[in-house]
Length: 494
Image (tube, rainbow, N blue to C red; front, side, top):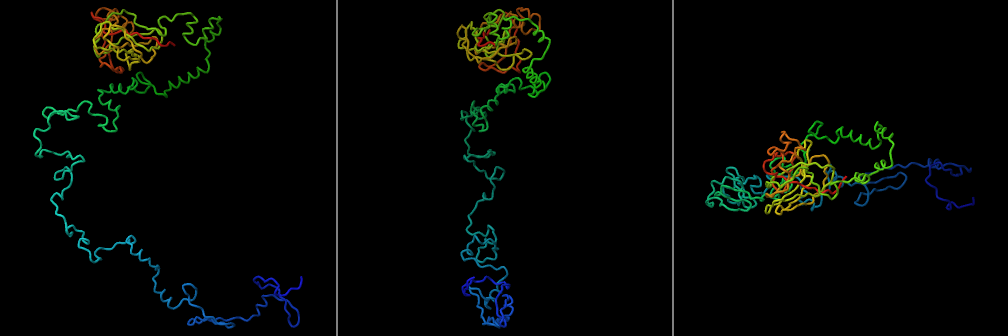
């Protein structure tokens, strides 16, 4: 290491007392530590005089300690000590005057009796101590209402509420005069008030009354309401498993049948018939019938005519004699049963007017039957108005519906007049052939006993639900039937 002056050496860090130091002791070179050198220094005694704030040193200069100021730290003066001793425990610095004077910052209460300069009413709260009171009449002490002793208040339209008016005076003599008062007509010298037809609209019944709801209000009975709602015969039946009930969707008989049907579409069970068919010797032509897509295709392969049951043909399913009937009874449905020989879809109904009735109209319809062959439900198809004022055939398109072969259906006609239609013979036994009759003469077609038709009273223009209606049975007499024969045009065949 090159020679360096002492001043050229790097300054040491804080001494720990263990650092080695070179010394000459008694002419000899020796080593020691900074801690051993420090131990040889004499001690310093310090004394403090409070009156003068003097800190005296036995080895150095004395120091007078300063008093603390707002900016510099120091000793607490006697005056500051006296001031601090005068503060209560928890005392805080006062808020500014603006804060102290703001009423919103005063949350406590003060009894009015402790405040001077207030008027008497401020401390008593009594109405009698008010000065400048208004002069009130005796009505001021009464309550509002309609009971005895109450004051009556007019409503928003300036009208009296419901009160006894027998004591009112200066009313016009004679009460309310007769005449039309808007929605109400007054008669019998004011004794009878009648609401005009159509005056009670859904708006006047309230916003929660709909036109559909209002339509139920004038129905005479539950059956009429079911007709308005468009409900079928099942609406009055209970869910169950006995006769006369309807089956629930999860009925085991239905779910079991569905499971069986699903299985049947998956494979054909082996049985004796299948084995017998497999053993048949077939011809090419015979096998060709098995590939036909429908009955029409099979008939074409066989070269068989479809007879009258062809698409576009008009069909009259009645087998008995037809005559000009007697005049229809207005607002009365005449019903006659029939059977189709094969299933077909029809979309047009027609009839013949044989004797006119001026200004009259007729309507035609087809009804179905229940399990007892009684006419039931709403029409499967029905026309609008057809003129009964011209002696000719009349017809109209209807929504297409299907007639199933072998099932009983009902021709139906209604009129607002008395035209005469082409009708079944009064002595025909066709109805007995289909429905049977309670007496032997019913089936033999005698002049007084053959069953001609059924009738139901019904206002012309609407077709009712006949599920819960029992038609009147009409027997023949010397006059012809009051029904009609309805021809149906075929629009499709299965």
